[in-house]
Length: 393
Ligand SMILES: *Cc1c(COP(=O)(O)O)cnc(C)c1O
Image (cartoon, rainbow, N blue to C red):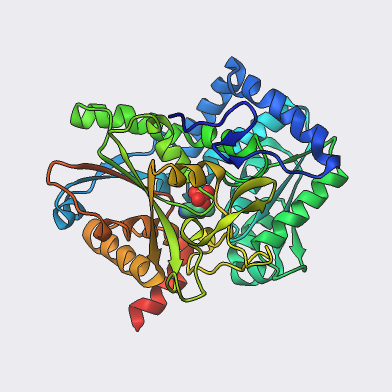
């Protein structure tokens, strides 16, 4: 079994590049060039230097003693929350902006929902002195005001999107429209393992530094370079893809993907796309999509803005279809409880997204010798308002 992308951009039935005619050249250009760039010595050197000196890598692999005691196994946390800008997203934006520059693009666009990818993109654009436009739904701009202010301070233009529900899906559509109008000079930095081929593969490779580090860090601490379980949360799937990348073909390692259950699978307010989605095309890829019988996208819901996406990466759709990965829905309340638990046991306030990965722990049964690596994709500063609501009630 091979869980990697094939030459045509498919993971099993999922993936591909379903794009408007006007973007064919751009996407084809990227398909032809991305591997050449990613594998070149000059890219590798600059990417690795920036990850180390700018983003702060390697991120620690921390043995969580009290959390381990609670769940009766050995749990390590991969601390992506300690990266510059507070999450794993910077690994991807640094990589893509270097790809953009080597393809002689002079302008960057991006979409953002919660604003995290927008901030990571605006950050790297400031670093590289590139003009940057970030598309963001008006509803999200109101909900995520501090991130809008950060992007503006970093020099990006935040473009309010007024179509549809004025959230992430609409912002993505608008960014694609911009790309269609400026195909020659503009590079579209996508924030997760979604979109037309080669984006899911490119983003997975750029995040694969996470599992590359887990390998040598585990070897140093445990004398074996693989865990029994890998656990990560899934919105579009980029932190999970990075966490599992170098273990995909190692069947000794069980993969657990935590999805946002929202208010419950049957509540009509959920973002558990792997459980609830049906096969369809979303943002240029064939994947699992939350849709009604007429193929209209259903608005997802999660307490966590970063998991609130109606699709999932084609890699993850295939991993669950082939049963290589187990997808577990974790609902809002379970995620909140898990965030307070980690805070009280380890003194680490996780992002709400990462709290969903932690919320999967009580749903698994471990043996005492089991080694578990769980990725804390981001820090909780941005979620304090939500946490405090539950703290005081
Ligand atoms: C954006 C985000 C996610 C979800 O995105 P993936 O592509 O699924 O990783 C998860 N955690 C944090 C902290 C995020 O900012």
